[in-house]
Length: 241
Image 1 (cartoon, one colour):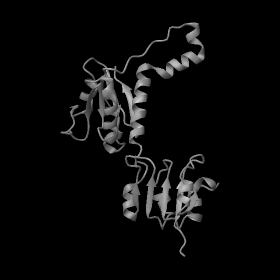
Image 2 (image 1 turned 180 degrees about the vertical axis):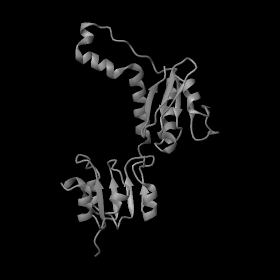
Image 3 (image 1 turned 90 degrees about the vertical axis):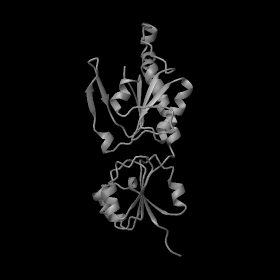
């Protein structure tokens, strides 16, 4: 009977949810169990590893790959793969997978939750109460409602579409900017980020972190202020008022 494949798992010590499942069919090699620096650990113990499960966002480039001569597959539990050198992996014949749409619903939920939190100033209100200032002064500046707001979504892919769907019951007026206009989508399309920002109360970022979205840009508004565009590898909400 042949020996089961060896799978390298890189994760924080407390994120052990995949160990039992993987150990049913594979031999598991966890990086966090060794006190050796990662390159030393890999060179000593991982030469026969055939798959690499990266639960954290460890940067995977030519350096760690040079210690994994038998590697055939990298599994990223994140949606983004910007921490993986895809060109180097292709050169070495290593397949790379990600989480796909597994977390799309959850991320959309969080995005709307963050949006309500920002507009209603929930974290600031919580700090005000716990500090005792509400009982002493009672003059906390209230936030604003989400209902009826003009919301621009930067990146109307899987997650962006789910965010828009969740915002519709709030009566939000939704528009978007994406890599291309989607003919089947009823929302108003803006061809550039600045026009999207200029015509909305809130911008939700739901775009991939890549060369096209990474660089920050700042340009003047017609009223003398500035629009600031920032890109994240997760959804975020930013007030534009």
